[in-house]
Image 1 (cartoon, helix red, strand yellow):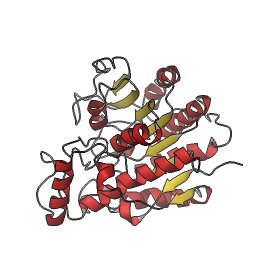
Image 2 (cartoon, rainbow, N blue to C red):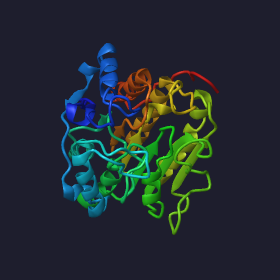
Image 3 (cartoon, rainbow, N blue to C red):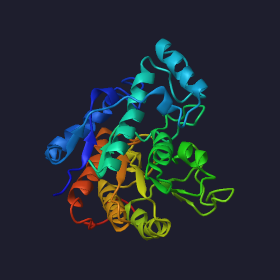
Image 4 (cartoon, helix red, strand yellow):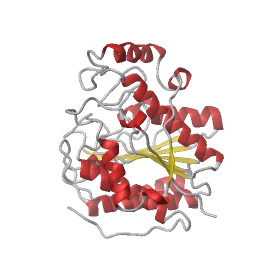
Length: 330
């Protein structure tokens, strides 16, 4: 009997953001869920409730000093948690801790066999560093999950795939010297966008050379050029044989985002998610945990993230990719 894909939904993670006038506002989860309901996908998934991370869990990636800073500034709602990108709004500690706790809960459910695919819309905060926030990201849930997989489950070989328009620098540099963290990141060329990193020559250091695959793309890249990267991504994953796949699905790489210049379509998201599921099945475990990440156009958030969930649903039993025609751009 097939296990339904799981989706984490709840006010606790919906509240993660920086106010109604900020690009990362409180409307983002609703935009996703409304599209899920519109397409009838809500009845084809199991809904999970958010879970809050503990101090000990946050310390698997972040320093106690930084966690304490977030706690303090969360009470006052004044200043920034980094150099000026990430405001310290009131209550941000709790909502950020719920993001991390929800990804940990999803990890536990995948490892127990209760779920094999989980999507969390408000998660994938890939810019946060161990000692600092960055780019609207307070706590790095992916970083916490990677350490948890190693420490709690002895899963050493982990793949991290990131299709957000921005380079996942918080994950990349934290694991740059880790030979068993297989990092794949397609993003708008860092010479044209924040955070300015993720160059093709950045492939890992200190014995981890060749375990990182940064694939910077020119502004206005569309589906056909993006889909051409799939064979390279596939070979990288099948060669390195990860035992768990994390995927960050920032919808800001879809055409029409207000702060980026990429031109992908939801069809590209569907295709890459389907391929990732197939690879996970070929590797014999089927474990895929996907997160929403960035994205600041409500329509793109809805259609892009729903495409990820639809790929999970459509490929749930067979693991076979259902290909689509390339969409916008070239």
